[in-house]
Image (cartoon, one colour):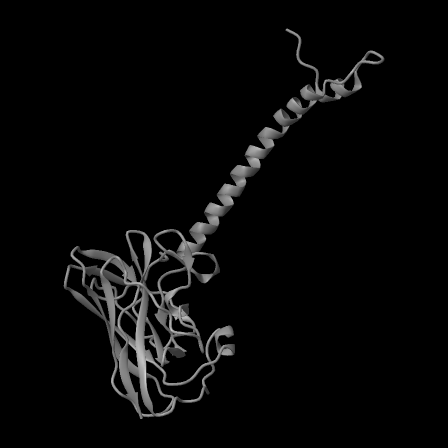
Length: 255
């Protein structure tokens, strides 16, 4: 059985005045490129898969840089992990509907309006509890309670230190910032159960420029004496979805 002419024969021909079948040329050209395209696509897919594995192995949950003490691996305490909780490119989190959003420590930025966040559909709520503090630039240590106010059990994981925002009259004065330690805290709460997390804030005023740096300067001015609001937020992974969980603000007295 005679073989089909190759592309060079289709163009060159052997008879004067022979016309070129352009459809046949295009068809055979595509047929030649197809194996190469499949090969390139396979390599590209593997490369992306390799990056994904590397990212998962290198990234975990986060812990505030101000709390760098060792954390045990007991079931009721934070543990190290090779996983990441729904982290996406650009430092954003993926919501349950697939829309990217800012992570918990970036929903409120210096000098901006305090974000309004809808309650989590999981029923999880964060409640901040901090003591009054004197005017100054020393960190103030408190706790944040994660409570399951829903009707079904919730299991997942989160950062052991939620993000804290200091505000006054709806304007952000300071928020959690800086490098983090890659750790996570297990979450396993039946309806009505709670989990207490350590947290801290610094009663100082940051600016838009501070949000452009990796971490805030250590010489930010202290807030004046008065009443302020503290709110907590956390990215909590439940059923492979990153839930942004917040709660009511607490009023604290500075000075």
